[in-house]
Length: 90
Image (cartoon, rainbow, N blue to C red; front, top):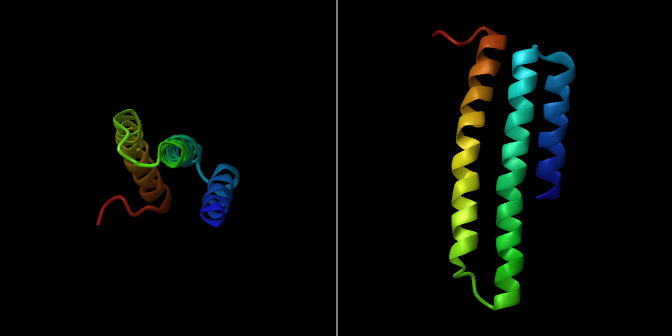
């Protein structure tokens, strides 16, 4: 997991330095949303270890909300990247 975050964060930093402003802003919003989603999952995992099971409705709800919350930044980044690359239209 750590290696994936390093690669993702490095890519976001590269976009921030070399990419158009719209792509850089979208990449940062996606990074924040992905972090929130990952944090919700890790907190759920920690709670499951403490409780001895993973049936924790409050964790499930937080995880699902974070997953939903990352969808719009994900789409926005994809659109900004396609515009920057000139591939928005087929």
